[in-house]
Image (cartoon, rainbow, N blue to C red; front, side):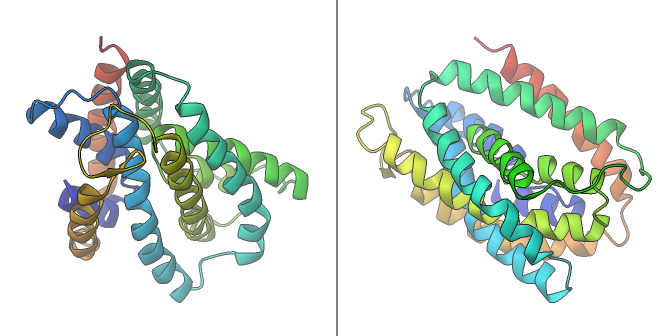
Length: 255
């Protein structure tokens, strides 16, 4: 699973959460696990993996000069608060409802990947500090709620606000770190005394899975980047979008 997430990240530039959450749920089901909190654990474990992959991604984008650090600093407070709040909001839902929320989000993200076209320069100016903090809060809360690094939300926002695409992608990669760190902190707290967790968990985070997935994904990401030079990435991205729509629809209608 980590290998697949790493290759897709390098090949298509997508975050791991869209792969890891349904992947973890599938692995849990194949192993016959039926812990009451396993949907929460899949989301929290996905976010913990994003912490490590975001560090690697930030380093690469910073080296290329594609991270707008002043813009990141204006988004970060909202991202931190929103992500922490998102983890606490997730704890209010049962596993089936949270799975359906993820399914709807995956369906929308997949649909966007299928129909996405090269767009002209954005029509809006960047908002001020309050507007960026508010946007960061919304992005952070939704990202923590469904276990993603936020790139599928941050990149469209920044590109719509006339941020050059390469800088939108690089800045979005940096934004994944505060989202993941705050989200994991929230899931550690809310899941600390949860009785329905899988063994070897800390809070809602299943750390053995984090270590295995992170190691595999970081080794596989460079191979995905190499494949991007000779495979039709745009076509593959649409194909993955279709798959994500199918997965999202299945999860949304489950139960």
